[in-house]
Amino acid sequence: MENKTFIISEAGVNHNGSIEIAKKMIEVAKECGADAIKFQTFKAEKVISKYAPKAEYQKQTTGEIDSQLEMVKKLELSFDDFIVLKEYCDKLNIMFLSTPFDFESIDFLDDLGLEIFKIPSGEITNLPYLEKIGKLGKKVILSTGMADLGEIEDALDILTSCGTKKEDITILHCNTEYPTPYEDVNLLAMLTIKEALKVKVGYSDHTLGIEVPIAAVALGASVIEKHFTLDKNMEGPDHKASLEPHELKAMIDAIRNIEKSLGNGIKKPSKSELKNKDIARKSIVAKREIKKGEIFTEDNITVKRPGNGISPMRWYEVLGKVALKDYKEDELIEL
Image (spheres, rainbow, N blue to C red):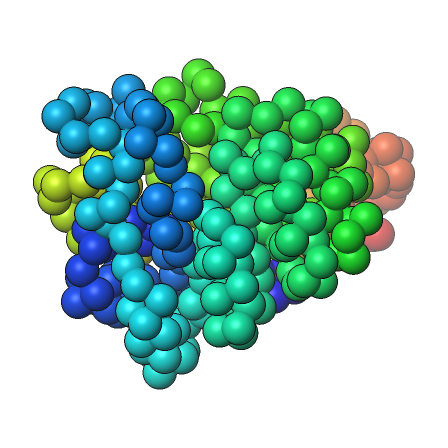
């Protein structure tokens, strides 16, 4: 996808454990123009201990009664469900992606034929997990929420030492707060990662709006990931910090426009503006009537539109020359 931002519409667990909602989300992602839709594949008991607390935003969106494990268990889809969803994505011609959160899920998604493995921010310090994905030799997208540059470099080293090519890895700048306050985005850190680690970079966004991912594309993000939902008012931990379909489409449309507008970096007139060149620029013209034989001076010549005569950049070349004919006021001067 050279010169085109790879846009991942993050369904995550916003299907609320329903395969029918998940299929509808695939349809919406395709209609909005996303390149891929991403889910989360896990066996809850293998990922979360019964003692794990909920994040503050999860308490705010789902209450404090059940534990993190109980909450996530309700959002789990089976491997069979994901086989169906992968087939549905293939049918609609949108890439199926899913983040694995445990070893069994990694093996399942590999067997399912995933082309790209997305590593979530929470696994960036999980050495055995990184080694297992690194050994697959697949393309990798690595989110870096909560990480510093040293931790990102360590994860990158593990992946590459296990067999994943560095050129097959894209690192996403990210902030793991839902929603992320604008003052905490630190979008320029994406450029720091690119320069320091010499890797492809992108951005995974958790702000409430669509401005930041659009800005990330203008800064050079090759991948954008953004959560979306069918309805922000649905029950579940991530809906309120996600885009609704019309917002997702607006973001994708804006990104595609930004891609077109970035161009090749060569400063020269575009085809569309050349027709306006003579209209907007100026030429040297007669300030008043000039008789043949008069000397051109600042008293009898001036600069006005249109620009299809002698350029004002030749002003001093014209001054002092002799008029070779009579001129009416505003007539283009000739040499």
